[in-house]
Image 1 (tube, rainbow, N blue to C red):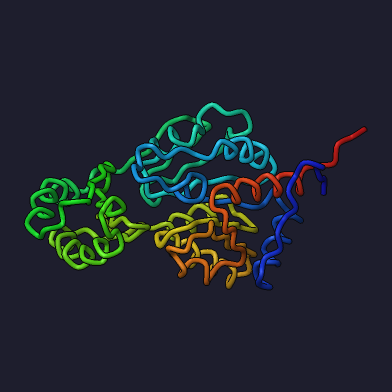
Image 2 (cartoon, rainbow, N blue to C red; image 1 turned 120 degrees about the horizontal axis):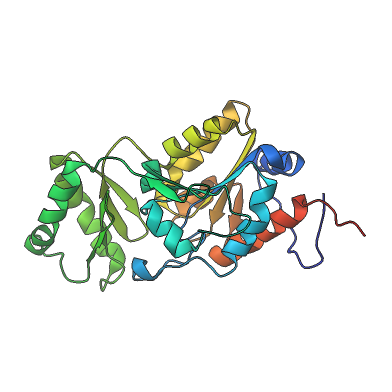
Length: 289
């Protein structure tokens, strides 16, 4: 394995399974998938999701890592095209085979073609979207909440409310009832509740992709409740003999993820970028003098 005097040292996972997963990735990088959430992992969480952008070091770190592994996949609840734009992933040397699995895997963007494959819109999303403004007003939850258009889904944010957590909890049950009426499910996140079609989550998306590329090791990094199914997918793969590493882009808001992670990076996207750069340096071939 190569190394760089400028690279940060690789942290050691806290669990035996995580250490095995990292060791497998380092030993056979060409057979490994590195999969990452976007918001909170590659990009900082911001009050206005439309202003979220990948950390400045994310693309260089991914471009150094991607040619050395089987694949890098960004798995996000955002529309795939939005994640590509906010991430700055298109047309980057080294990211020729990056894949973005958007809307929890319902959409897919491949760098090699530069196109997005998208499903037929689910009719319940349009119906729920039309009902939401009046619905929030009727239940007294309009002030401080904000509706985000996501194409194949619609989300209600509470981060701008005077008490974001209280607003979030107060909306859980009413939004679940609204979603059920339109054949949707509610995906909770960090001060956001997303109404989306059933049948797909990050775990399903990750399992399908890992099997598609026949990966022999997998790393998944996330920060939110929506990443729990992906954690479950890695645990399933480990039980089937595929080593895996679970990384939490640390947040006090989501202890459920930190408790299941093999490796906690408490600095969020800044720490994730340092980790990716260190990983790329650790598996790069030694420079020839």
